[in-house]
Image 1: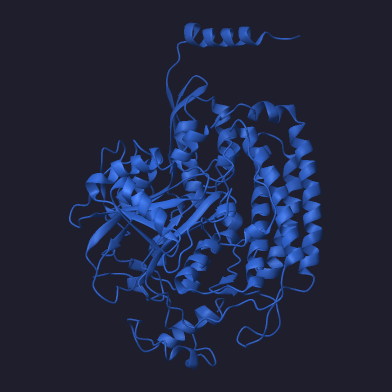
Image 2 (image 1 turned 90 degrees about the vertical axis):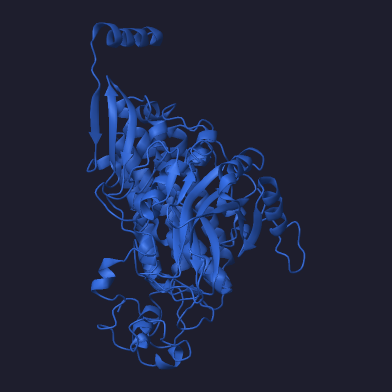
Length: 396
Length: 219
């Protein structure tokens, strides 16, 4: 039987507004709701099946990193910034380290830059795979989780092999990188390098990731329920997105082909050939699909970087006690979640005078009151999940 | 999509300086470039106008962030500047375009006693949360903000944590990084003697405190 959609809509609306006497209700979601990816609380006024005046309440994870940075030295701060967006901890280190290097005037050896770039893209892949795992789960499909997490483990194992950490690598040093495995103890001046076989294993893993992404695409794109719950839901126009500072895949899903990897020089992305996937409608489906396509582009970048990685030192010569000269700079990077930047004010000491942390998820969820206005209650979960935020990245 | 803007390469002058001057002229401010960062200082009374111009005429439609710097000569935490600075709050708003990769940080000075600035919500809707954060962290009042309540901090929280006059209590109780529980690394003397330990307020054991952060962070 084919239902006349106009008739169905008409019936449901009339039954709500005419026959039932509805009463506004305040609905609390969180802070412990599993689909909020951490501790986010939403207060919403619910009228029938629709939510209005949704107010996110954040701050449950606030750790005061901007204040803590003022009493720590530069090498110590990388351990803090790892924990901002813990799903892609490695990528958080890069703009901070680059900002400090910029003020110091340190030239990072080419091999170290390639390693940073490869690991950043692997962090992006693992972050997007977490999204690929959790988003269908929130929509009621459990199977993609296993496919995505299996591949994520593959990538994280490799990251761990180089850095010693799955989530918090703390791998970048001012002037280069410092692999955990190498030869000799940390106190002896020995040359350390990538673990043997890392590049070959990474190449294999990338091939497998691409295969798995195709599988994931089949599982999700061929699933009518997921498509019905995401297509046309939570549409975010580009003009609204930029005014709120929504960045990264969420912005690109709204049709803006803007990627900081193409315009900033924090890592040598200009050497590699890759495309910027964009969406057309800015709905939940596009936000899912853009991330899926981005994984393929990241794989391309990693493969090219493995082919072209030069040999050489991993660390530039820097003083043992690092004092960054006076100055101010802002360095931003394309993180998996969007624009991550650090505004660094140095007064010539071992730690910053002021470090402003611009995190992507903070601006990305500031759109929630706008985008959740008047949506159906079940769509709240579909829309929030599609924005792919991490509360550590919101609260800093 | 172009690579980083470098069309006007001249010796000594930064390639972005010409762009900084153009923005400054359009908004009636003063443009500088430090370490590839374009910063335009505007007077407080032109704050909202300047950002409206940036959005409407310069194409800087993307609202990146808003925050402040507490410029103080007397600090409770961290290290002060070597020479005294003019006491003030500097309000910063970073905006960008979404095509060529241009980005500008607008800056204005607020007086220290009762810092206040007009809200930017009418120009960039995203300023809402950033201004709430600056309000609770620095005690800056934003005139015309519809919902200037705490964002991160609990409602009962007193004080403005990111002010330089606000002490970090955990550090008062126990100096950190600890000078007590860390042994000097072998051979750490030659690296630290010229850099000096005079910046460690406690004095004395600065070399021992510095060495592990560089050589062995897992210690």
